[in-house]
Length: 602
Ligand code: F6R
Image 1: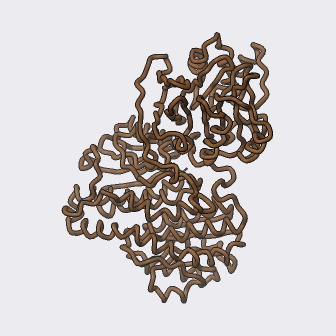
Image 2 (image 1 turned 180 degrees about the horizontal axis):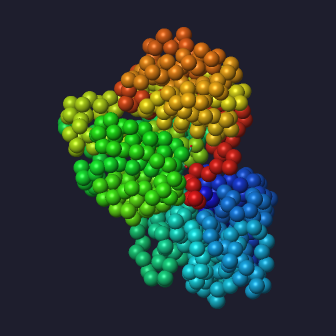
Image 3 (image 1 turned 135 degrees about the vertical axis):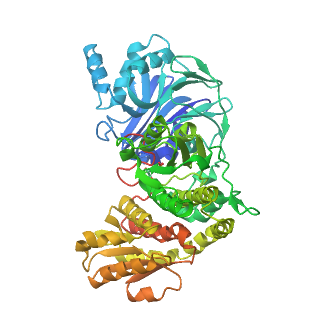
């Protein structure tokens, strides 16, 4: 939520800031702004709306200077207007902020009494004035003093007209320093840095950084020096670009074969037939597993919980992170808490993990972004290795998450003796086919597109799936609603007759996820129940299932695959259905309204 960039060096800061913000726009796109220190003093340019509006304004009047900060906003306090856009200014000081200052009203009242005048409705402006109030010629000291009075979550970068440095701090919200030669950078996330450097320092919670042209110093919030932990990131610039696709989302859907290859790479031991996960946690000591996540990651966790129970016969439950934290979960040292997250920054998931750890659980992160907060706080990490995901709607990371969780389930099954070596070997052998099968699924994109076109005027959709495909149905509905804004509901197929069946009429498209597997017969019965009531059935089925054509208006075929692995393929036509529908309706696929990719507020 909200993207921050900072630059100090020899280039035109405005250019670097716009380029960086372009790569962070997935974090929010309600408004954008930059501040540059020019020979005439600080210049702030900010605009409501997408980054392109700001970029146009900057083309007309680009502030010249080599020190600056920028921000792209996902509104929390106050509507998305020019006035509420960041950076916020207090005299000679400007500030960008990602997060929420919880005690801002109290601080605001105090500052107003001292004579500060507020121009915006934001909590950030309070922080700007508070730092200015503490300023006595040393921005670092002023920021430290201000933060000691502020409560909440923040990543902030401040600069002062009289100083050559950027001063930054973080608690909860992420912040990364990029190290260059004669220039240095700050950003909320690595893609903003990739055009310039792959040498980065992930700031820890409670750390601050003073960033100058030739020097970066990291300290804690009390001012004690901290070591500079430099990491070389593996992601390349090309991976973070659209590569000829019209949207990141489409590119990422088509990257799934590669992402699966990467997730599985080196993790299947040819000789022993075992998954190699390189974990230091002693997995055999756990008696239950809690998989906790949000949104798409939660649906992957849900599928993971079924796989773990099936293969390892250990109680496993998936839960939405925002609920988990506040319901006093029963957790102890025999609980393996699995935080599933693309970004590794989702605050609900992070806080749920902290809560579980406080109660004695061991935490394993199943995470895509290296160096993210969850990876640093978890006891161990199983990386997803799907490469950067920029499209706001998660696609390739969903399938790669399920692949990673399948490996975990097999590993647990082997350790607990519920899965024989032969069974493990056979399943892993099938897993190795996944990249090729995902590719074969994507080759049918044209057919999926035709079906999307046929139904794109529908105002509502229903998605049904049973057992391992209940999560697939929910994920299909989520994809459709978040990018096309069509109302879509999902139900476990057997649950339909307990209420949602009343919705079915001759206008309602009902997507029934029914590939071949142990749940096929039962799901097909549900499909027939929909058909008998005039519903327009779109079935997701396995190649060769001709019979299903008699019960469905359209069939989205996927290649034959092991039933336990079918969730990884069955979601692909649903991703493309959502994508094509959104494109046909003229929606902004990569930046759907009201959303942000990384949700760092509760
Ligand atoms: C939907 C989507 C979100 C995320 C959710 C969790 O397409 O992307 O529902 O899955 O916000 O995000 P991460 O995985 O970063 O924790």
